[in-house]
Each structure stands twice: as structure tokens, then as C-alpha cells.
Length: 289
Image (tube, rainbow, N blue to C red):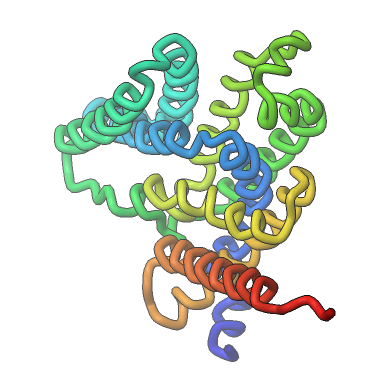
């Protein structure tokens, strides 16, 4: 622990501080957006969006290295690809319900394939692993500022549309009867998810972001039932798992993203087992005569 604290306070190596701070800031968006995504059963939709982001990353790197267009960074490429994918998937999920799973699966694979093709045509060697699984070395002061702005935007949207989002998540048909803009809210949730995925890409990567978006919420669901309580608990759990995962990755000299996700998974399994044991214990207790 002393070695970790020394590295954390070393002024010449700020990346560890940035990593911990990004984990704390990312937890706000993970917990809030993830609560809506899990409650509305939209995890597969967000999965397709997250994998489609790689197409934007690959295209941006291709333009940078082939045509020296420096202002188009992987961040902006991923952001455009994510938002565009969110809008397309939102439209598809509304008008092609019978083939929704097939179209989502195809979008998932096509986005990854396009990204890998662009990376293959990019001059020089580009390692896709840091984008797929994250890297604490990619986190900069700019990323921290972007995370702060993201949290402000997410919280602002949730405060503005909380009653409508609550109604949409728990009773979509009733929301339509009450003239709640269901299509707008559906697209808004997907766009919020896409932006969250892009902002968390340096932390846990494109592939692992889906797990960290859902696992803290699945853990929190076992202890709370109200949406607001679910958000708060998910945020706290995400902060805990990201901090513990980062400490574990530093001590074990492993990539931070996978260790964070495995930490969340371990806590989910433990919480599930404790819940099962508690339920069985209640059932075996015989009432007194």
C-alpha cells in the first residue's frame, strides 16, 4: 500500500491520479445511465453501439496517418460513430421489431469489421488493444475535463426528464397513452449511452465498457428497488469497483480495464450467493406455534 501511495503522489507520474479520478467521475455516468439501460433491457442495444464505435476510431486514425488530418482524433471519430449508431439503432428497433435482434447483431459485427479494416489500411502499426480494452496511459487532463462535462450533461438531462424517463422505463404503453415522447426518450437514452461509452473508452475500452455499465446496476438491484436509489447505489458500487480494480491492477501489473470488470463480477457473484443463502434461510425457518 505504501508503494501505491508513493506512486499516487509522485508529481512526475500523474497518470495514476488521472486513472483514479477518471474512475470516480466515470462512475457517475455508469451508475445513472446504466440504471436506465438495465431497467429498460437495452443492454444489447448499447452493446451494438459500443462495438460500432471502433469504426469511428479506425476511420479517424486512418485520416490522421494517411492524410495527416490531425484535428480528427479517435475521440471525435468515436463520438460521431457512436451517436450515428445510436440514432440508426433507435430507428431500427422501432420499425423492424421482428428482425431487431438480427439487425443489432449485424451492426455489432459490421462496426467492429469496419474499424479493423480502417486500422489495417492505416500506415504504420496501430495497436487496437488499448481501444478495445482500455489503457490508463491514455487518460490525460483533457479526458478528466471531458468526464466532468459529461457528468454535468448526464445529470442535467436526468433532472430535466426524470418523470418522463421513469414512466418510459417502467410502463411504455402507459407513457404513449399519456402522450410522453417515447421515441424521443428511447433515442435520448441510446445517445446518452453512446456518449458514455466513448468517454469511458480510455478507462475500460470499447468491449469491457458494457460490463461496467451493467454489473454495478445488477449488484445494486439486489438491495434496492426504487430507481433513484438504484442510481445512487450503482454510482457508489462503480466507484468502489473501479478504485479496487485499479489498485489490484497496479499491484499485479495487469491492465486496469479487465481487472475492474473482474472485480465487479466477483462482487456480483458474492452478492447473488448471499441473497440466495438469505432466501433459503428464511424459507427453512419454521414459524413458532
